[in-house]
Image 1: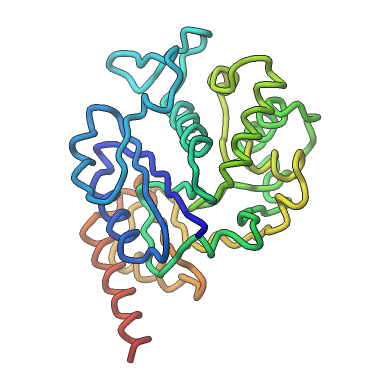
Image 2 (image 1 turned 90 degrees about the vertical axis):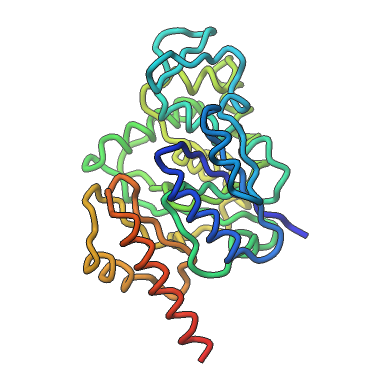
Amino acid sequence: MPRLAIITPSYAPDFELCADLHRSIQAQRVGPVTQQIIVPRRDLARFGQLAGAEVHAVAEFLPRTFRQLPGVNGWVNLRRPVPPLRGWIVQQIVKLAAAAESDADVVLLVDSDIEFVRPFGVDRFRRDGITRFYRKPGEIDDRLPRHVLWHQVARKLLGLPPGSAPFTDYICWPAPWDPQIVRELLRRVEAVSGQPWATAIGAQLHFSEEILYGVFVDEVLGAPANSYATDDMLCLGYSAEVALDEHGLAELLDQVAPDDIAVMISAKSGTPLPLRRAALAGRFAAGEQHAAD
């Protein structure tokens, strides 16, 4: 039977959000679904309380040449000490490494601030042996300069021509990946760069793992890898860094589509956890009861 593996990088400040995510996975999963939570070593004991999840240290997914800098969220790669690696880049390297090591049929990148609100399983992300592929053409242009940069970096790492805007958006939450494709992608980066893939990616000042995966699937592999394409994330998202109050949460949840299986309310929004919990529990518990009636 096909299997789905959820990969969640997290850390102590997001523990309560991650615990809510974990509970929602346990409540809504259908069929073989596992969760792998990856945290700094100092947070292992705390996240180990989440029964049923596999909890790993970040360092398990990094080359031995990567050393954390004391007192900051930064790393240095002894193979290439300059520039140091920001925590954001290292987190993306960890996601790629964890996905490449997975023996599941589909991996799903799920951040701590996502919560599943309806049943889901591997069948929602796999059709005829092909993994669901998020793509939204023409979404990235000069209005999103960082996204344009991410495309340019991805194309360089993959040995593709620079291209020109508008580019396709491949960033979604949650993000389904095919582990076999991730392994092929990393081999391509090594062949193009002549370096270990983590060194080549770690040398970048700007990088998006989802843009890299998307460009590889669309422009290197093509069909059939990109034949199950969609612009539906199956998730309602709120990414603004502005806190929602009770009224704002209600208005947001009014937008959940019938096919949505999850809701993402960015941790950076600062939305109070009790309000978030009450809104999600009240809305979806009530909705399920109404459906049952």
